[in-house]
Amino acid sequence: MKMLHLLQFALACLVPSHVVALVGITNEPYDPVCAFACGNSLSSFMLQCSTVTDVMVGHSHGNAGMTSAECRANDTAYLTSLAWCMNIKCAPYNVSTWLLQKYWEEQSTMDHTVLPKWDYTTALHMVSNPPTATLNMDDTLNITVLAEQATWDTQYRTMYFLTGESKYESVYGYVFTTCYISRWRNAYMLNI
Image 1 (cartoon, rainbow, N blue to C red):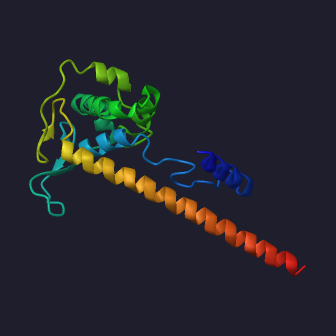
Image 2: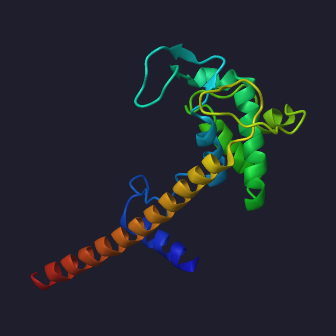
Image 3: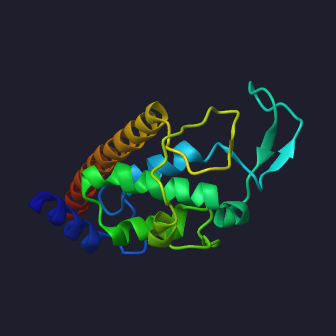
């Protein structure tokens, strides 16, 4: 942890703060990962307010459609399913309520400019009975459901490892850049 703080301090001294964005060091793109995994696990379902078309997209079959941020922001089944997923999946990681609320405000509708009709805790309290059902990919999300476990696991692992990989890339990039600048500065100073 001390190394991370030292690295951040050294970086802040070298580069103006508005330029620094080292993924995994100065920012975490998927924080909290458990909430992002919930959002991604539920995002592909059609909602009752989704716009449906007959066009086949890629290799999918059946109806394809678009779900707007406004649709997500006002769809009770989506919001309660997301809140329930975040509640049960993030509990083992001791994620604070304020961080879940931050995710909720910035990511739940998939457009940070569109806020959901409820905050996170209100949406969670709207779940009167714990859900037991999951959906198939062709189903419309019209009740509070559980995120399918295998889908959530895949999403979680992908984002977790991407963040770790990005952290290593940032650290190595910083170290190599710092060494290069240091060698260049020393070579330059010898020629003065």
